[in-house]
Figure: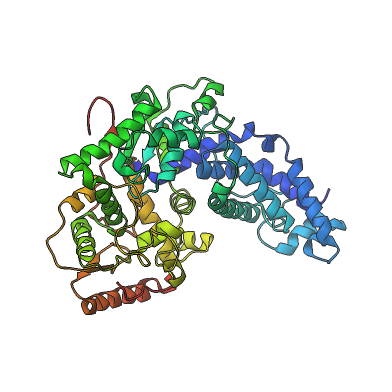
Length: 329
Length: 196
């Protein structure tokens, strides 16, 4: 495998070579005009922009900033923060997106966009084609049904056939794990929670078991991943406001499973739901945000101790991370 | 002609390609990249920030590209959809039809394009973290400073992004902040001929 940094450098170079075909490269007078309009408006209040407009000399003006070499006639420019150079005369390939890439833990709308681009469709057309092969159990909801991986348009004659294969692959995974059709929707929903809550594969059966145990005891799931699906919040933790968002997917406000899956799911997540760990645990928390290590607990007191461990880790490793985790669940 | 417009001319002439290249890595789309660079130039120079050295102007414009890219991603659902096949769009077969015939890509270029396709599946903040971390080789704290996020948040975005990317592309993401975990890194290649 080759270094990511090398590849990105290549991509930047390839992109830079296409600059000459842009209208901006040919003529940036529109930029100049827009800037001038804005600076004219500000000139009246004696700002820095105003100084330029009354005709201070080039060197005088650029010396005010005092950083590095001024730009003026005869000044040479220094190496760029990220310079794009490349071998002279290299051809500019036009990248064509023939692949539909579906990662794990991703919301369906992104996969719809990728599918649309690969096949040259509008997102609406793509969504229709992708939803058509869904089994009745999916209730028309694409979330969680598209099998992750690389799908190449060259392998299928029509987008409808690829869509069918994407969903059939998920059905095959469900069946090979011994899941009956009546449970498909529920298993995918649980698997998506496992996918989004567990940081390491080895913890997935344990996380699946905790979810199962809580549901059996009619305890609310209170999973941050459901809040993030409902509210698209940023950051590692959720705030009290975010946990109050009014959505059927918010498992802080609603009992039971969310109405459907919240992401694409890996085979490992489905297998974890099919065969969860045998345990009475009812709580889990990540205690190391770098390694993803989790601690599990059967009672609330033990869980509170575990949460303290996370808070300590945050204080030691990243104090400005934002609101600290609540002690529940 | 005032000095700022001279500075703008110089920046476009000498660094326009580099800035466009960066925007292109972020968007994978020529027209979007052009828009980002255009708007970033306007925002930088109208605030009088283009008048220092060419390097500082370059840095300001690059920062403006990054923030506009992230903000644009969040508003994408509110914008009218571009029709597929628009010129300059990296991702439609139609754009390939307009392109001149290309020689075979070297394996490295093919792999780089593969990686590009893969990062285009990421949401804007994750994508920006990956690009800043690996294209610019910035440390986590540098990425956090550039994006105005906590370092823990950046680490989380990077971990999530790399975990997703590893399932769909064969590239080495050497990230010292994340010790190897128990995550399987195989790539599922689906085809009609064989079930992977």
